[in-house]
Every structure is written in structure tokens, then in C-alpha cells.
Length: 199
Image (cartoon, rainbow, N blue to C red; front, side, top):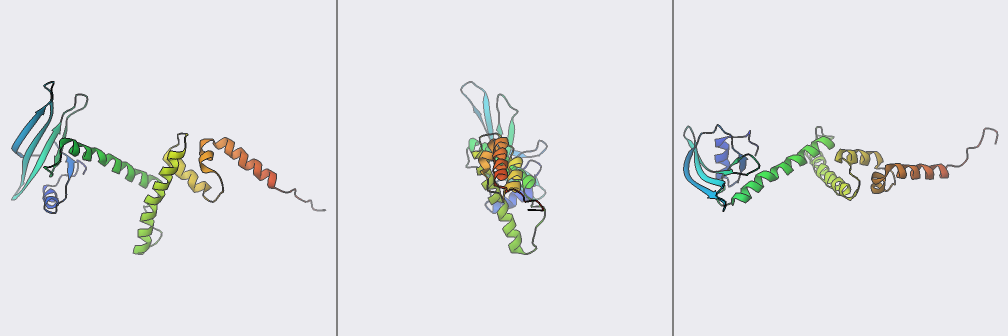
């Protein structure tokens, strides 16, 4: 979850339902430390701290795990989770992987029309919602086969423009000038001579 989303009642509901969450912790949260363990590397530097904390909001209490990870090159990162069984590396990896999910959502919103639906039935909306990730996956596979660097949005646009033409899309994207000259050269050869008005 994003750092802007901090709701102790929601965290407690998720815990009761058996859902594991990992989020970046805000600095101004008030909590009580129940247990605390500090880990030190062989050089004597603190690598991370692992704490069991309790949040109190009126009559509601929520026990969570506060993990602070120190890095020599970066600022310390404080993560909050309700899973006490994961290792520190697992908690850190789970939070880092959320960027890949957000990047995918951004890519889908920028390149595919999901801000309006072509139909108003449940089936039509489900079909359009499923077609978008399938198309995104196919174009991702296509973009990885192209050796020349092209932006994803450029490939999506070119697929839209050339979808109904019989062309080798990968070679066209790798060398568009050469492929276009070949296409137009073949078209010019196939055109029969135009008869005049008096023929």
C-alpha cells in the first residue's frame, strides 16, 4: 500500500481477515514499542531494527511489525506490516515490487482506452477489461523482439496504424525507412498503367 494510506481500523480489519499488508510508515504516527531487536553487521553498523508495536485509536488497538532498514547509500526506510513470519528481505522485496505494479497500471492507463466503455452490460465491460491486459502483454512481447529502442507508446501507436496491413512489423520498426521504401516500391510495381480517355 502507498504511504498516504494509513488507517489503523482498516489495518485491523485486514489482519482479522488474514490479509497481509506492507506499507511505508509515516513519520508522525504514534505507537508503543512492545519488543525491539537491532541487527548489526560484522563491521559494527546497524543494518535494520525489527520492532513489535501497538497502535491505539480510541478503543481500537492494532499490533503490527515496524521494520527500519538502514543502507549506507540511501536514507533509512521504515516499513509497517502485520506479518511477523517474513524475513526482513521478504518485507523489503514485497514493498519494492509494488513499483512494478504501479508502472503497469500507468502503462495501461496511458496506452489503452479504459476511461470509457464501449458497452454498458456487465459482459461488455468484462470483455473490454480483459482485452486491455491481453493486448498489453502481446505488445510487450512484440516490443522485446524489436532490437531498436522504441518507446512502448510508439509501438502501440504503430500497431494501431498498421494493424490491417500485411507487413513484417518487427523489421518495419527496426528500420522504418528501408521497410517503407520496399512497401512503396512494391506498390508502384503492381499498379497497372492507367488508360487514357481515348484508349
